[in-house]
Length: 351
Image 1 (cartoon, rainbow, N blue to C red):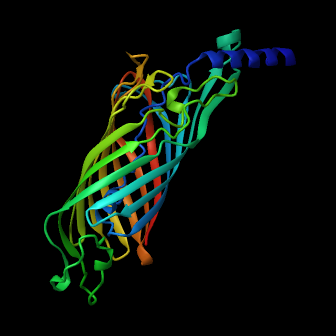
Image 2 (image 1 turned 60 degrees about the vertical axis):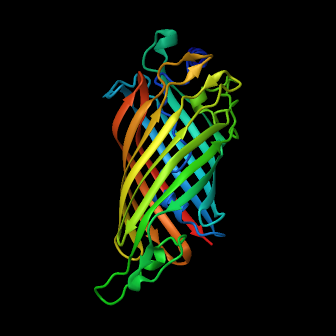
Image 3 (image 1 turned 120 degrees about the vertical axis):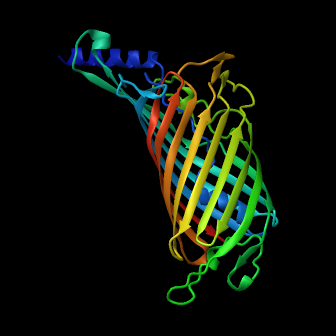
């Protein structure tokens, strides 16, 4: 009996080593840049000479399989977990130029089950295979060129500097009065690069290189550009943003990730001096990947999330944000795993 079980285990390991990284592809690869609404507002409002350091943690689980827009059967009981801890550093170079860098540490693992019947004809014995990587991902560096239109004022028409973030405007005046501000439209042109700092040669326990979607990096230096818009009127704020990444070339493994676009629209409401509630729609679109110049299957597609957030604004320019991304629309090329949900926690300090 022991030899039989050992033989089944060895045969299953051999089978796993010959299969692709997952029977169902792990789903769209998300851009490293944050999608939090006030993170984007922050890029528009950092005063000259000030630093903002933010630390964020994101957890994503991909378990539901989709074929195009419709749910499909996840035959291998496979799922993927994406964990990202990111350091987000922003510096106000001048009143209209903001510099930003996002340094992610990634923990990406895919788990699947294989029935021993596939290698021995004996049903009922399952082997679990877990593959993945952890370490530094691709670093993002960005420059935001800001244009302001209109005045930035508060009660008594007292002018504030164009770089003020507006949090100090929320000072109550009397039992029923609430201080606020109105701000003219603020726009920013975003220009940046995704740097190939993440490892692309991670292997499994058998020494075989993992699929590209499970690697820490992409292996290419890719340009990013986009536009950001934000406006606030007393307790209300709203904004739009869009970013586009172009994959410049194949990596050393002759794999080329598809181009990617992300977009967001949000409306926020300041509940009181310390709390702000945000409703956001944000979407990702990914083109089909290429392998040796040939389009791949089970890659690319689009997904739309509804993202509610609660932001706490504390003393000394400290903010804490919690958000949850829930997919409301999906349309993938062929069969892929889709995000069930994404949880994001973020804290920031300006000094």
